[in-house]
Amino acid sequence: MGELKKLVEEGKVKYIGLSEASPDTIKRAHAVHPISAVQMEWSLWSRDIEEEIIPLCRELGIAVVPYSPIGRGFFGGRAVVESLSSETMLKSHPRFTEENIEKNKVFYTRIEKLAANHGCTPAQLALAWVINQGDDVVPIPGTTKIRNLDDNIGSLQVKLTKEDLKEISDAVPINEVAGVRSAQFQLTWKFANTPQPKSSQV
Image (cartoon, rainbow, N blue to C red; front, top):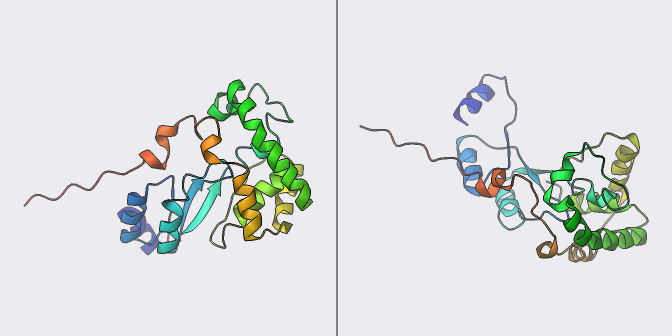
């Protein structure tokens, strides 16, 4: 952070962001130089950042940039109504294994029904749920298809009330989702505390 701060002061960097950082790391980094954004996985079936990370970021005025806001494509129908290609890395993802996808299909079905009530696709509803978490939330859905890009843009038209957000959340109880959210869970924010600096010897 000290080196990044120097780059800001030299005009080479404008903003500083972190990814999958622990609460302690965020606080320590922000004390050295203001953090503009923290990138974290956040979606209907990945909500472990809501208890600690989100309140901390809001307290410090840090924007949240959720990646995989459509559940790595799950709420777009990947592995439910669309088959996975043999080359995709999702084949090794814990939530997309044959056993777990069968258990998780129920969540897609629930979101599909709610999406119909809102006149949108399941992917649009899942993305709208993330977008409507606050003005400080800027999700980054990824896609390689124009039709998915158009679908993602359409999610901005989906307006949700607090009651809608709760109903959608309740449709995907996080303690019932089968499989951990990352194949490399040890690399997530829960294991990402950077070491404390060594005290200088006199």
